[in-house]
Image 1 (cartoon, rainbow, N blue to C red):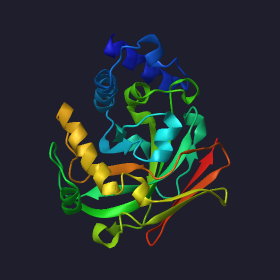
Image 2: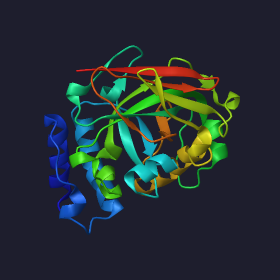
Image 3: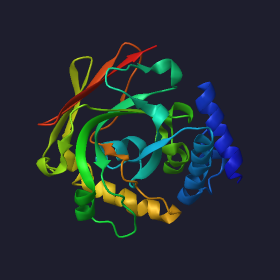
Length: 258
């Protein structure tokens, strides 16, 4: 198995908006550690091309998303400045392949978190604000028919993200009982509470910090950490608008255009 060659295939698929056969069909022996090494090949390529790392995401932390992709453990991906949509900026689906949108909380770090051994208490101490967010995920794997190793190699199926304008101090957020609604074109499509994310999204952030320790990666002060979707992602296309609203924390909306 050639990590660089497989990373090349994913890189070209993203650039050319094409889909490739899932990697695990061709390499059934691929481990999750193999998949992260493929992911890191393209992380290095992005950094060398001038892209700036702005944060990390942990995914597959809710039952809804785990059932959607038939997995039972989380994964993670890297977030870059070119993925970030500013408030009011549209998401162009012509730049993507098969996008889906999901609502989640983003944590704004004031202190660096380095695993192993990071606890939920450490996360509360390190985080200044929590922000309603929408992540737009996309897959370079054909028809979203992915196994865990496929989405890991594909940078956690990352594509775009938007964080809301309202920042709430973490101590003001009930991390178990804060409700979220996800609306598409004004209609409610999903709802849940923050308890869907590992009982507490801060626990997902701690898990991420500890998972990253395997590759000596830290969650840097000043970065964004997306804690995972509360509910299953919804497909989007040009003309759609998706709003994630969090109880007592405001909302964030992404509009999709060709």
